[in-house]
Image (tube, rainbow, N blue to C red; front, top):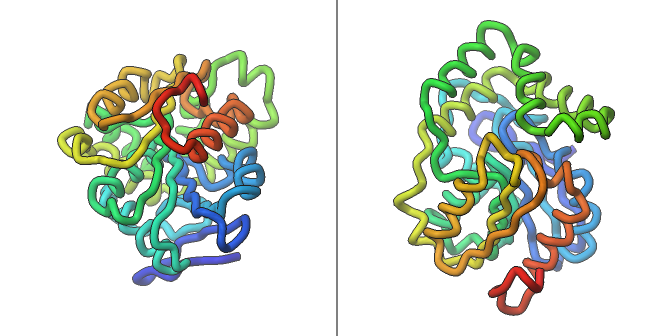
Amino acid sequence: MPFCPMEGWSLHYEVEGEADAPPLILSNSLAADMSMWDRQAPRWAKRFRVVRYDQRGHGRSTATGGDYSIGMLGRDVIALMDHLGIGRAHWCGISMGGMTGMWLAMHAPERMLRLVLANTSALMPPRELWDERIATARAHGMEALATPTIERWFPAEFRAREPETVTRIRAVVAATPVDGYAGCCAAIRDLDLRDGLGSIRHQALVIVGDKDISTPPAAGEFIRSCVPGTLLARLDTAHMSNVERPEEFVDLVETFLQLDQPSDLASV
């Protein structure tokens, strides 16, 4: 089980694919772990060196104490890339993973190639919402947040159609360390990447879910309007678009990453 040693803690990761293939880093959402990519990673590993990792305080990565920041989460990725000898990589992140990717594109542009920013936002108000979630987690544990989280992430028809998938992901949410969840909630609460979006010069694909109430389509459309040349794709999903529409998500991302000159979603 590979871990990247940090300063007094460790970051859990997995690598699939050929060592000389183009690197592709996958970054999970709040209250999830690298298993959220189970339906995508094996397929992408046929063409890319796929690196999955558990964000700080999630999965098997250490839950350090205190508030986190998106910058902190971004610097974790740079340390992981250095550990693996990766100079530049493609990026695919959902929700908090997309926020981390935007921070990296702004603050370490030389380390990023193409960006896939799915079901994400540059700002997540109101602050009080995140403070309430932190308080609930600390007072009652993650079990109290598991069902409401799943209901935001997946529409009722998907929950009825794939109960085993929903049960598995709910267990991941419930098992998220409270310190890790609270720390990342603080990072999202304090997030405001709006002013830096115009500095991003990477080829990017923003994916929105038409039924997403956590990061509504307008949030992705705002990112597209600010980042020059960004493409936008819509999926008939709620927040976890890669879980709801795994094959569509796989094809969309893989095609985008392999286009000679991404310019038109009609070819994606």
